[in-house]
Length: 406
Image (cartoon, rainbow, N blue to C red; front, top):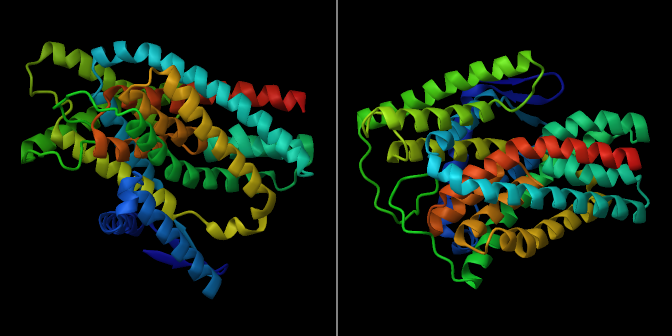
């Protein structure tokens, strides 16, 4: 289950990687139960455990020189499970409600990308760095995440002579996950308390059910029915993903699976009586939260912190600038533009999640908030659509525009 190669890299194979992720989640839950401050500021349990373990693996490297490298294929399957459940839980009424907020969130996010890039380029120039480094530390890696950073870094290296552009992009994307995980919950809590917001009365089960809620017993057939629904939607999503790839259209696998879940739910609930096709059931909520929790725990525990040390200096300034800007946009622009409601407060946690980190981080932030304060169906619908699809397209255009101007 582990292989130590000649370069002192300890390769952890998939089975043990998932097992470690579950242990990390248990540790994070135990710490959150013991430390009131973590619960108070809505710090997700996988973030607590994941950061602790990533620091532990860094210490192992400092002492022994051994680098721990996890095989994360199973982690990505869990992400597909999670977003497929989000689709299955989406009803037509939610889609109607989500139209305007989705457009508003997209507009705010595009404005944030422009502001972040301008601030990053300007700060990099003042620090004596190539301006393109500021772009790397802004929408390329923060909003774009690891995939966008890896895709654009070679272009920046070739056109602007930044030899370590790939390393810079990966470092910024990694730290963005951490900053997003730590900032989203506290900002949402601040907005909820300051504006005395409450979740709408809703007894249906969804991701982020309050921890104090009374959970009905999940029986054999309800759980099996939920698994079957996820797999049916997943198979349709996988076939759609392959078809789109054959046409040259690239997107994350979980997005067509999300769409398949939405389509099936809103077709089948009209045809079959209630109970045949599961939607917003306790079993689906359980599967979604376990999938997301283990996914994020594995993502954070597998961070290679030893790669960050040599690039820490000026990048700390650039990352701090992006954090301040994201919090400002969340409180004073995103929350207000979305109507100052409870849903708007939950969305701000998601906005910080994908603005600084990635869509799964956004979902974990919102889950931590809704577990404490109540569900928000609109937030869990519009945030993944904006964060996982529309933003990738908009970000590519924004990056091209800035690179052409530098």
